[in-house]
Length: 175
Image (cartoon, rainbow, N blue to C red; front, side, top):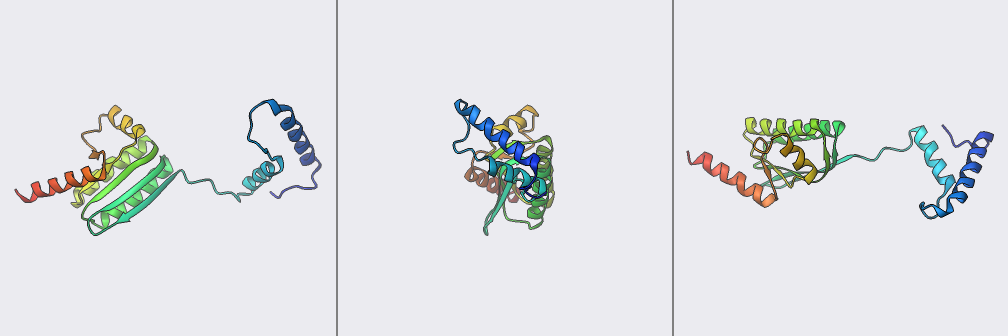
């Protein structure tokens, strides 16, 4: 849908919005409220010109010793799928240690928690040492509420997780 400059109805709506913006002068609103820019953004969104902001971001940092998958934002249904794919790929690469850093996570759906459980099981099956680091409070509450604290290898810091994983490896080889 194009910006309808010549549309009479559009001009009426803009005039009404400008009048409303003047009326609410005593009500807090963003300084410099630009009705034309607001309407242009609305029409651009109808055209599909605007991409919705990503709800979840991921960054992989790999060294010879450790691979860290850092997740930020919300692990919702679509984010869970992306996270699952990325974790599957990382486990398939068989790093020496694999860490999932959830420090910047603002939300984790039930599907997201299931992905954490699946990744833990997949890593164990593949023989890849895996740990979850820096669970944000919102994720930690969900883990605790569901009684998953013993099923998920959660650690406060990357250093603690590495130390724990290396200890497990030493215990396995000393048998």
